[in-house]
Image (cartoon, rainbow, N blue to C red):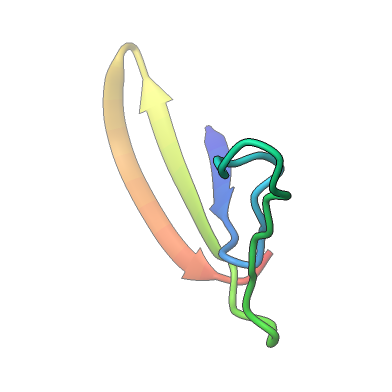
Amino acid sequence: MDESGIDSNENYPYGWSKKGQRFHSSRPGFRRDRLSIIGALCKNKLLDTMVYQGY
């Protein structure tokens, strides 16, 4: 069994800008839901997957 999550509130730790200019990133000003994905693997076969909102 394995769990993975997707959160869209992250900002960018690095980016591209013209030489001598600072890189600025933006992120949403409101909290969004997190998607969690769970999958079960048995004998190299995927048994089932589940996606739900939250932690």
